[in-house]
Image 1 (cartoon, helix red, strand yellow):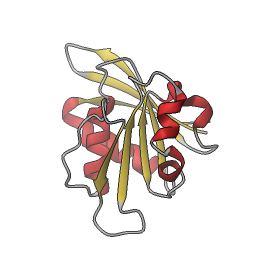
Image 2 (cartoon, one colour):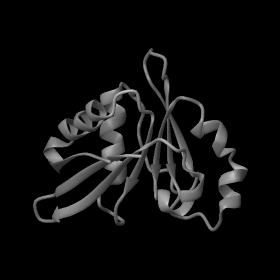
Image 3 (cartoon, rainbow, N blue to C red):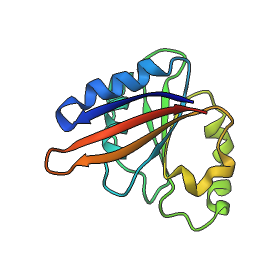
Length: 145
């Protein structure tokens, strides 16, 4: 089910991040779809900031998962995954994905198509499309699964 669509410019990324958070109350699992370089990690950085993380958000391309602390609240951690470089699901099993995915903490997953059969039943999918490279404008479409 589509929740909404918004356009975001690099200068309005905080507003787009807040729109996503406000559009998906009580959700903790988010997937980010889009071509290489479209801004998945940049959007995750903005969402982490809006949720209260002061950590330096970077792509976990080689480590597969990064952990960011949140101030207070029931959810005090963000787990940020990047599955672009995995060669098989064994790598995901080896990191103990279930402990992360079903922890009740925030999980942000880049390249979820590589692990589609391991995704939980309920999650928010964010599709990012490039509208204009020159203007750094993207379209964000949000779906609830």
